[in-house]
Length: 151
Image (cartoon, rainbow, N blue to C red; front, side):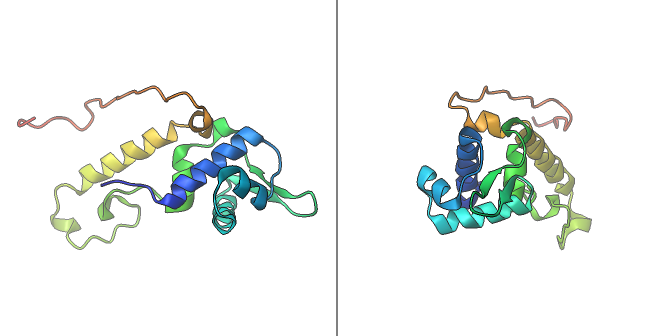
């Protein structure tokens, strides 16, 4: 099963709140606004700041805000910041360490599937995630991977 961690889910909730609130907000304020525990919010803000999704300002009037507009931050960027690059199998990542790679016929297909998932996530912005309306469903499966005789 493909599933994102709770931290990634929480990071998305946190970023959606930042997208709506705009301006600088403390970790304590964001914890209160999202219902997340403050230590979790601090951990997420640190990772998101390191990834360039969020920026921080120190001082009495400091806090956190989005580094760019919500429409310029993608779901893929959020996932990459918390989980690391999307790779659905060991061999589909950038630094593959698969022991049977030389004998495997499906590795390149998994790489293509991972790339397609990443591309789909790139096309969804934080602005869309923060919008209460449902995302339009668009399945563009194409024929780039082809279909076998048994399909």
